[in-house]
Image (cartoon, rainbow, N blue to C red; front, side, top):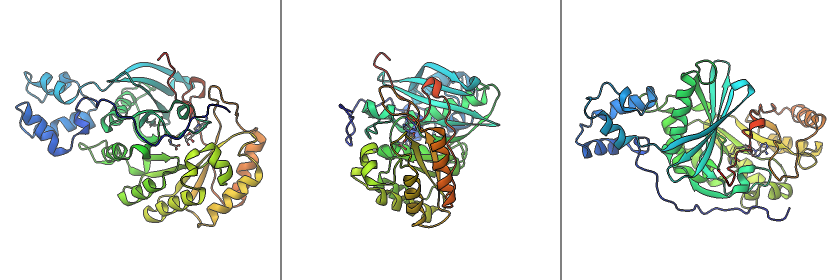
Length: 370
Ligand code: SAH
């Protein structure tokens, strides 16, 4: 491969999105209301509209005086993102939406229906600086971080769409995975503010269970340690893809900063502090990382740290434009899984949705003309 993407740790600075309710602390909400001549107690009314009723529209806020509804909504709920288009797969049970942000930057999110619930795959950055060569987002480079309100809005809009039956029948959005575009732990503050809004009980948040929130990381070790100390028992997923540094340096460039062992040690610390079992993500790439000895090496490194602390999610590689790599042969995949299980490592092939609409793991990317 010639022009490989390169690691990009610095975040480009761009104009800020307009001030939005979801970005404000409780005290700032009261201040903002005062600024437009409204009493502070309206903050709770607005939180109920936003997090419980999932609305930002003035005409639905019938408990506010009719003559000020519009002014309040305009001041506190500016439009942060507009849908450009949606693509459906799996008979309408997977929907990928392309959003345009205030500065015309585009991002995607993917909503998936399961029996009686829905999961949102949320985007935390426009593009990504981590440069993994098999991931379409990694090829784009990093455009900018999303604000917490921009991430929270993806959740609100998805929760509303799920509730209103846009996935076929009304379901509750119960799970959020930070597995859309970007490296969530490289946008730490906005992601943590979002996580807090996800798990806070209504009306101060969406009231999701922390275990139904998954933060997926390429392995930013200091940020994993910081997450460990937050005391919010979200599910941590680590995108490992290789258990030896030689190969991981190639396919997950951040490994040149934090090695496989350092990454697994941080993942183990997360488990031992939170009690939450960690997921190891492993995209199976034909003849690259799918050899039987690599399954054995992975199992040994995981077992060396303890029992019952981890499970492995192999993901058949999804195709990305211009990539020479493909998914492993099904027999090779089966053997990889068999070996992990034979070592006693719980292993489940990851259900990956929406590959025919480029909405599956590693396929989210914005084309030039969009
Ligand atoms: N940056 C974070 C969040 C992205 S999550 C992370 O790396 O974890 C997207 C998941 O899909 C990651 O596990 C990523 O490694 C995986 N992935 C990327 N490209 C893929 C591809 N082409 N096929 C299958 N999985 C892929």
